[in-house]
Image (cartoon, rainbow, N blue to C red; front, side, top):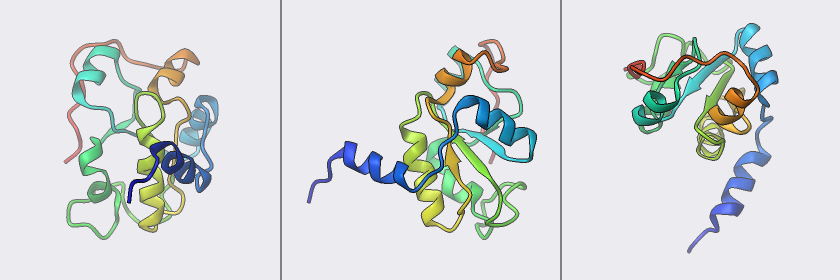
Length: 135
């Protein structure tokens, strides 16, 4: 059975309280953790958000789940407020919804992704050598 990708995205977003760039900035100032899932070539070309944790999309669930053997140090429990970010805000919605289905109930994403953050004139590093993903 085929599922329309637009419907899948709408269903994923319906379970999230998505954050615009300013709301995400405010949440980060109060302990939320921004996770950059963009691939290395995008981070190299466009820059990064200072302080964001880089976890490429194919490792996300294993790095953020507190019971995973592959978790990162920040994945202490299901109450961590993860803000997932991709380039434009599509893949991050699907990723955040998946995190919620896994029990990470405070996971959400950044509306418009990195592009919206940059357009909002929030802090961004210069393009160049990207941060290595968290392993």
